[in-house]
Image (cartoon, rainbow, N blue to C red):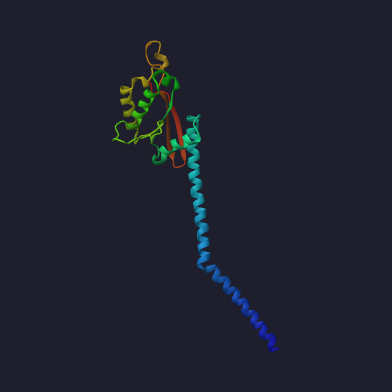
Length: 200
């Protein structure tokens, strides 16, 4: 009988030790670290998902504007939007090949460089060398630049079809097609075609 009792006591002690070991494991720094890692991982996945949503939404706006652009070009255009605040319009210019054929690539590049640098300090650009996407700080700056370029590069602007018969010697092809892209919220992007931006 004493021997059986001793064996029972030993079994109970081992069971208690196992429960203590389980408790130590639960409250150990290793377990806490693993729990923290899981929380951080879930948080990272959530943030990354939001970021991907923003990217996809911006791509949906840029791809219809640049249907022939490569993924690399779209990525470069997207870089201009990195510091754009909500509701600030970004000017996007799609080149008009007919105007380029009429006046030459150099003339076209000069117009784009003017949009990128007008009234900015030396060596600063508002297009990150994209020659397509231009980030202005405010709408007034954008239209002041447009009005100045109308004087500097008059051939970039065109006579609208309704007036072309009255001005037979006028410029009938704009330098490009103007679009405005803006973010009404953190994860949304809207875009619109401005059909009169390059009208004389």
